[in-house]
Image (tube, rainbow, N blue to C red; front, side, top):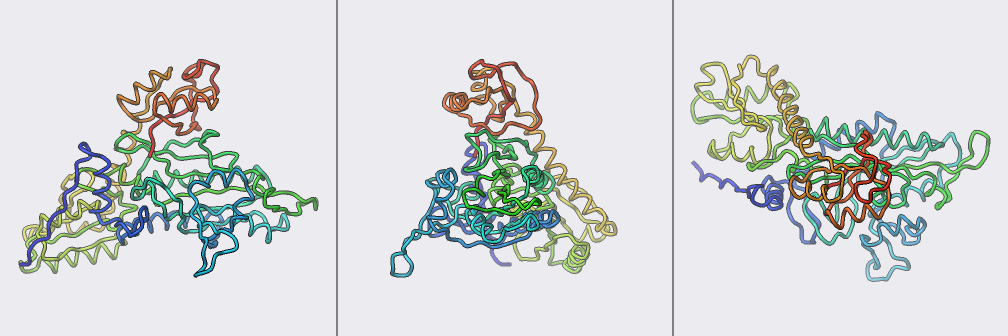
Length: 478
């Protein structure tokens, strides 16, 4: 037998959570480093997870009437300058192209950090009448933001995402779009990725550059930090005015359309890792897992074992389950550790004694429970087990979220709760920027969102004691 591969070891998350995360990203073969700092290679297994997210979102977008388009990767500086707030928000992260071949360009070109200006320029040419509206576009692409500190998935200089851009005849239609797309992201997090979310709006300080309103879904990681997992923005007609996008309305009057944009990126894979992972590696919800079931023959050198394992593989594959069989000459211990590291939701072990008894052993990745399953009932039972894993992961993450939301009535209490427990600290807030800045300076927390589901915790702001306007969630975020 060939020499067994070495089982990769990862740092315990309790020892060093940041190193644990990096270990999982690398050793579960999700990413690799490239020759340019902050630009990561998305390996096949990592890209397969993104493909499943893409497929889910793309289907939802098209069901709601959106069409996919492709915009250029370069933006002329003069075009970027047309919306003042927008360009100021992205200026520190812009990367510029100044040479074409050996010649200096007459105008700097920005490598797109986002594409609002490109869409607006296009719409100024093609939007003429109310009959043209709404225009509901989406593009799948990469963007570049010159971050100083980078980590796989969470903060890269280049990352993959989708960015939706729409224009509408009325503000009501645009607001409906903004809220509807946030719900698509919430569904993606909760139904596909088993990551419970808090829905809400961003403060003026935290909203997207150039937006009138920004809505967000916030998730809680295993270490009780927050991750902004998807955002949806309402622009009003500000961009339309800046780019002179007009249309003849039903009364033949020239009007400005109302605009939205919304996006979700590969950053959510980082959230997936930090929500469900453990000290054995990645833990994937079945609905997003590239491999839902791994079939592992036991004592495969014995007669009939590989044949029966192949039958099991073929039956599950025909039933529409994403299944793989490992008949390599690596040891059983290596195979178990390898697919635990990769987070495969179910492992099926099948040996000579199992075959005699007409059963196999299914091992759940989420809790390592072993279930004996009749081979005759395999195609009925395995989907049930996969759904049980999916629900189990959601319930565990929901418990982590619910048990780490704390109420504070003063800044000092908020600071102490964060230091002792982490998580989301909810308080009442007057809505003033000074109090938001003070919470960050003295308690180390940023505003995460003003949740849609409001509760009256107190009459006054926890920071300044003035009359309160909102309940707000604070937290330490990635």
